[in-house]
Length: 112
Image 1 (spheres, one colour):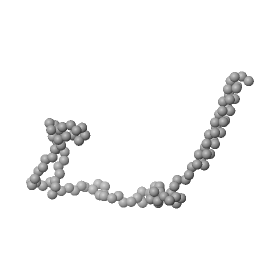
Image 2 (image 1 turned 30 degrees about the vertical axis):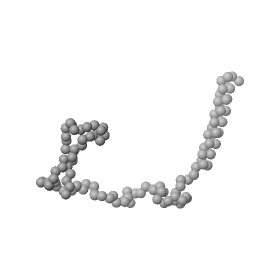
Image 3 (image 1 turned 90 degrees about the vertical axis):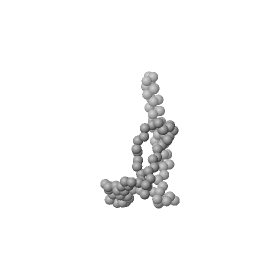
Image 4 (image 1 turned 135 degrees about the vertical axis):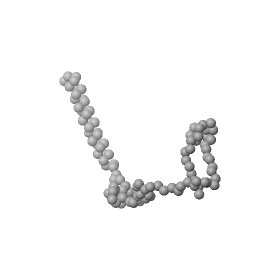
């Protein structure tokens, strides 16, 4: 037999051996698999079971205001009793001083 013929014979034998090992490991893996635990086959609570997808019309009602609802806010009083200006002295993120920076109105809040 030539050298190439022997190499092919050894490679084929090794390949068949590895394929047999793979099949044996697959069977072992299949035996070791357990079904997923549910409340019917274990002591798991029914609330922990995986829920099936429900049709859209059976979904629960969405809480809160309806979509497209116009927001209602009280109007600000023209002549408030007391005005309090609040400004930040230090940047919360960088901890840098803001005393010399230009101011910009961000929010107006009225407490009645």
